[in-house]
Image (cartoon, rainbow, N blue to C red):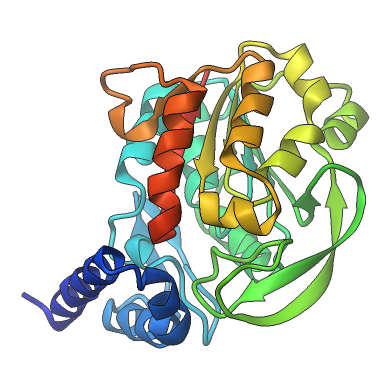
Length: 296
């Protein structure tokens, strides 16, 4: 076994142990950046173009690092499979919080030349890699937008995480932040109204706690496309930093007609009630973990 795999297994064991004694949050804040940078360097993917899910990608700018599971080839395996199952040729996909393009590229490949992908990413470093990764793979069916998505158009403060480059947020988080920057923001309704409401079929949303804001800014789109499907991250700790409870978020979506499935169980779909997901959120909150929820 290679040194990077040994180090990664040690990292996972340490995190599991920290979860068990309630120290995952403090451990992530204190040693997360150093461990993350070390594992990314050991993975052999630091600062170079690598193959991820069949795509040529650069995962982080110099001195930063991506989600560790992405660097180690274990990133959101179940959600990736769900994408492959549900994104079909000719579909239009919306990627809110695109990061460096993992799901954007996957959606572009699955939707094909007749499909479209709209990809929103507010952080300038990540956006630069997003554009580079799109160009490296030759996709012409992707529209990129270097803006945050929120409940009103204007300007927002983006807090840059010292942890991996997928954790930046427009809300203060409990982990360390290196700086804050002003970024332009739009709503989904404002953006797509200006385009005369093109058909959309699928949404992936990963916005580090501002999910309710995004939903409040896309009620017009959801009313126009009632059969749209969505993957959304449910992270109680990040929602709490935005002064939003899981119950409030889920009730908002339920009011729009959505029903919920855990992505982990997508191969045998089973509806989960709001109450069941709220109960699960209480468990997730204690460890700082999250799940992805498939909403239909």
